[in-house]
Image 1 (cartoon, rainbow, N blue to C red):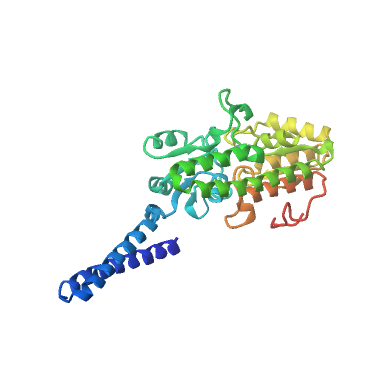
Image 2 (cartoon, rainbow, N blue to C red):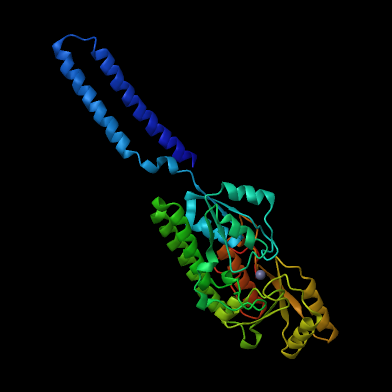
Length: 360
Ligand SMILES: [Zn+2]
C-alpha cells in the first residue's frame, strides 16, 4: 500500500516541479527585452505546459482511491474468500476466529466499531449467525451489507432440521457449493469497487481452480473408504452437504444448530447404531464442546464396543490464522484427509498438496 502511495507522491512532485518551472519562465521572461530569447522562452513555456498536461492525463483519476477497500466478514471462511478474491485491493477483518461457534456468536463492541468503519460488510446468512440476524438487518439500512450464502440457488440447499422455513447453512462443507459463495463475494467486491473488476475476476478464477482441485481430491480419497465405513458421526449436524456430495451418511449428536441440546435419547440411539454397524471412529469438532461425544463413547464402551476419536474436524471455524488450516482450502483438505484416513482409506501423508501440519 505504501509503495503505491510513494509512487503517487513521486508523480505529483514531478508534476509540481514542471508547473513551477513554467511559472519561473513566465516571471523571468517578462524581464527580458531581446527578441531572440523571447521565441525560445515561449517555446519552452509551451512545451513545459503540454508536458504538465500530459502528466496530469497519465495520472489515473483513481490514484487517490488506491487505499484498500475495508471489508469486515463474519466467519473465517468468508474472510478467506474476500482475501483470495480481493488480494492487495482489500483489507479484511474476520470477526470469528478459530474455535468460535457462529450459531452462538454475538457482535462485540469492537466488532461494531470495525463495521462502522468498513466499506463493505459480508455475512453468511441462512440463519447461521442466528444471534446477529436482527443486527445485520438494521445495519443494512445504513451500510453496505451482503449475506453471501443467500446467493446460493435455493434448489441446491438442504432443509433445516429445526426450522421448517429455513435451510441448512453449512454450505462451505461442499467445495462445489462454496464456489457459488466465492462468486457472490466477487460480485460484492466488484460492486463496491468497480474499477478493480478485472483484478477481482482474475483472482477469483485462480481461487475457483484451487477449489475445483480440492473437490476432485475429496472425491478421490473419500471414495477409497470401504463402503460400510462411510458414516460420519460428529457433535453437531454440520456435515450434511459434505455427506450429500461424497455419499456419506452423517449422524450428528446435536441438530444443525449447536443451540439445541443433545437429548439422552439421541445418544442412546446413536450408541445402538454404532454397535450394530460396528463403526469404530467418531469425530470431534474444533468449535463445539466434546462433552456429548464423550457420553457417546462411554455409552458404547458400556456395551462392550470400542470407539475411538477419528480426529478433530473444522466444522464451523477454520484453523489458526497464518497456517494452511487457517485457509478455506486447508480447512477442507484437513477434514477430507482426516475423515478418509480414520475410516480406512490410504491418504497422502500431508493431504492434497503436502501442506497439512500433521502427518497421517
Ligand atoms: Zn454449525
